[in-house]
Every structure is written in structure tokens, then in C-alpha cells.
Length: 243
Image (cartoon, rainbow, N blue to C red; front, side, top):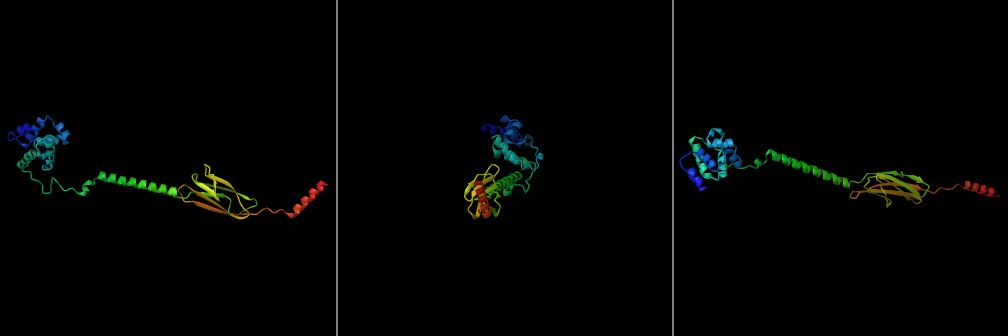
């Protein structure tokens, strides 16, 4: 570093010559230096040849000088001072509205790509939330239940009734407290003993986390009465056959 400073500071060369000599002493081509500091080779060439007209705002080019000083391990103060003399010699004045260190606004961070990412993230969160809500509703909603037999008000003359229906395959079915087997097609069937008179058949279906659904049917069971005349005739026939 001291050797470089001695060589560069020797004489009254201009900014461009000093910058070029620093680069050559480091053994860098413009392309190599461009890769190191991220500045296009054409910009480095314009600075070395002091072509200020190539820059829309020569004062803004100071940031390139700082990057070059860092890449060349040179004195930033020295190069900026030489560059300021170059600007002064060419009567380049800084615009009143230009600021090398402008105050950062919050809106500066909200570039289009970040806004799109934020919107996409919100959309994904919204979709996932909606899906979870739908899943919870599906789990807690009562299952479908259809009772095909018996019909309401059925009158039977035997002490049993056939109960048949259909529900979700994942549902548990109970008929008057007795569990019925649900097939792969959702069909269930159960034979239930009933007492004489009016009885209530209560069928309940429920999934693991859902509310239950209940259907009731009322049936009437009365024993079949035997006709007295028919009984007497039957006894006479039997007696005659015996004689």
C-alpha cells in the first residue's frame, strides 16, 4: 500500500491517470476490476479517460469512485479529492436537489417485487385458512342420515320391526341404544324387538367429532286376534276326522 501511494502521488497527474495507474499496479484489467467492484467496464474507462460527458450526473458518479477505491485498496479520500478537482476544473456544479446520502423513506423498501411477494403470501395464507375452516366444518357437521324403514305410524302384528337406513360410511349408528353395523356403502340394518302398543324408534348417527343427527319413528304393535268362529269350526273338523 505505501508503495502504491508513493507511485500515484508522484507528480501532478489528473484523476483519470491516477486511477488507471492504480489499476495497472494491481495487475487488473478493466474487465477484472469490473467483476470485483460490480461496475461496468465502460464506466471505468470513462472515469480513467475523464469523459465526464458520459455521465448524466457526474456528481452521482462519486459512488463509483468509492467502490473503485475499495476494490483497489486505495485511499478513498485521495481519489474523491482528485475527482472533486476534476469536477471543479470542468465547471461541473452539483444540482441543488441532488443528495449523495438521501433520507431513506419507508416506501423505498416497497418495491414492486416485494409487494407481489407480500400479496402472494397473503393469498396463500388466506387459502390455507379457508381450507382449515372448511375442514373443521366438515368434521363438526352432522352426517347425512336417511331412514328407509320403518315408516312413521307403521302398524305391525309381530313383536319385532326391521330398521334400515343409510348414512356416511364414517358415522356410528345407534338404534334405541343398540349399535348398528354400517356397510361400505353406508347402508345399515337392524331387527329390533318392540313391546305391545306404541313404540318410539330412535336412530342416531354421529361422526367422531361431529354433532349427532337423530330421526324418530313411531310404530304400533298389536297382536293378531284369532276369529272365534273359525276356531270352533276347526275343532269340529278335527273331531269329525277323528271319528
